[in-house]
Image (tube, rainbow, N blue to C red; front, side):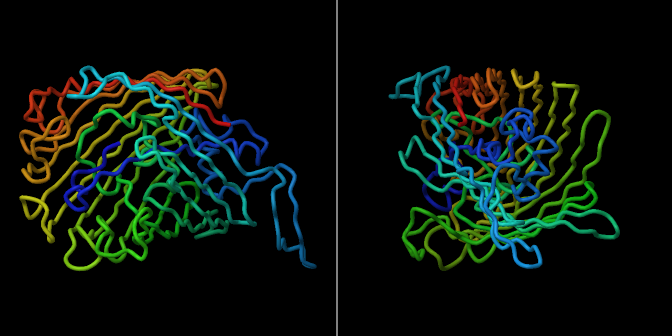
Length: 435
């Protein structure tokens, strides 16, 4: 997925990301439970799955090796089940019109290949780690990390889950599917054109964060922490050749209110990230980005079937102190809605409209074939429709179609080279296996 041209103005290079799956058979083997115990359909979490993650992935029902002190305190705990699993996805992508000079109808094998490890490491400490393959760069990297400490107590006389998480991307640690890392759609094409402008909080920047969290009385969730630069694939220590490096630390916060409503559970929340980013190197002035989001999710169950409705609106204020844009300040707003109906574990039907609007900037959003903007605007809008068939809980056939009404600022001749937004309408078919 093409990342933000806002970041291109900083870093001068695009990054490619592969979506992770917070659903791995590692946890099924550890708990002795099927995937459906934690997921409506992978990787979307249900209430039990959210609590399992909040508890640090530490629930174990299979055989373990342990050592106890004289007071029965556990000094050592090790699962006898190998904590490894694999995700493999092969795909076919076709756009309505081919990109100039490029073939249309692209098979990617594998589209995603990830190796996971996770589960309880010691009492109160667990981990989720993904080593993922990037089919465009043809490289492996540590794409997702969520190392957690969790404990339970009381606050104002009410039960509370307390925790710490060390993770490598904001919202990786989140338990709702309305935030960027885990938002619908859960699979997407790595080779099709996508709108340019993406807020920093939704971009895969090189960083690592430590946050503290609490979930009070199953009603109020709060989290605060700091992120620091931690780029992979660059010279270390970072030097003048690095691009898009986070300056100092970036504060992150998250608040969510939850309650049972009717047949389901409602969450209304907000989160944000404040970053200063060097255009190049690790010294000098840095550009400033302030992201504030409002999100919501409602998940209801009717027997084996369920419905998830979600949305996320992100506002980003940009201050180009170090240059790289035509304007001194810009804004970017993105809105994504989604509704996914699950027919047991067998079928999933999802629809997701999306919008991006923002300040026109002729430097950030300049004309150029396919990826450019004739109008200098980041505005885009479209609709995603998806049908998933799961003959088994760990095997999915995914059929997705994306239509665009506006792409990088316009519906017709949006790039200044004669390409219309509808030319980027994308059919994506994938076979996804978890083992």
